[in-house]
Amino acid sequence: MFKVTCEIVYHIIIEFQSA
Image (cartoon, rainbow, N blue to C red; front, side, top):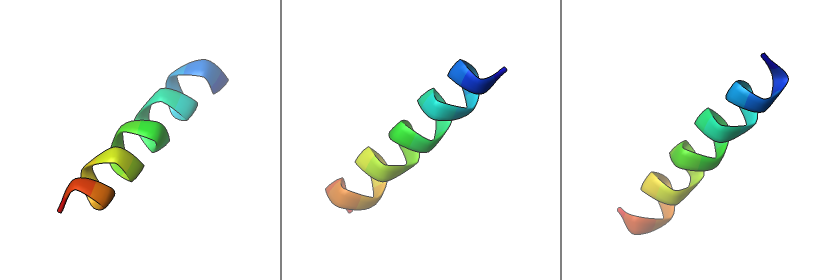
């Protein structure tokens, strides 16, 4: 579960930086 959460947060950060 923790690994999945980290992947989601990581993806959100990438999306935010790309915006």
